[in-house]
Image 1 (spheres, helix red, strand yellow):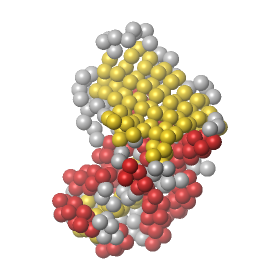
Image 2: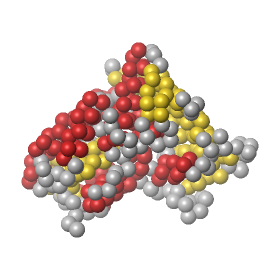
Image 3: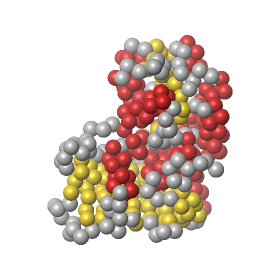
Length: 337
């Protein structure tokens, strides 16, 4: 099988990560960025071609797959242009979120499905090995039925970068909204409160309570002096505490008093104290290549991208109105409606 010819549009922080991953795999063909000097510098690192616009890159480099890692407000327009004008492109990896709003996301998803383009949406935390293992533990009944889940994702982003990233809900909340849909589904009540920076929602607390009693609480911030990425999943039989940076799961059985008796699982599981070195960005690219080469279903696809934005828009509406809203959380891979 001939290897896919892959190009990257946009080499900001995430684009450079994708370039490193693809470059190390010798799977990168070209790079395009409106900052041509930056594009040339990064392209030289991996001995690939540089362009100052993506149309020229797709045409001249004869690409059949593209990664879109441009500012969030441009995702939908770039995707539409590629779908409508470049039949050679058979695969797209779109950095999160799929689009800035649900209307754009639905339109883009419809276009991509009509062309049968293999599409991965980079909710990269879903690809974190520690999240994957925790979901398996939950599905196996290891902690019983999840009752209370806390998603804590806080860090700091310079105010000057916020317009290119969008609000905190679409920028970082989509990771946790997607993970929630892999734990809890069905009808629920949602309530959100947010604070803004320069007119952009930058701190949010979102509570989603399902009809079965399970509650998810999201602490999202880009105004936090430090970096926190944790999940605390309390079930009827036990608790999982996930350190998403260190990639450690601490398991506490319900019949154990909180103490040093708790068990820590560090991935991959060659033993109970082995450190994990699984890189979510690598797993995203691996999934993308698999989808292109075998037509396999992606771990995070169009349906997941749209579903996450449905939660984003509900949270925005709740924060604006101060009201509790009725929502329905679709399970992973559910048809887009």
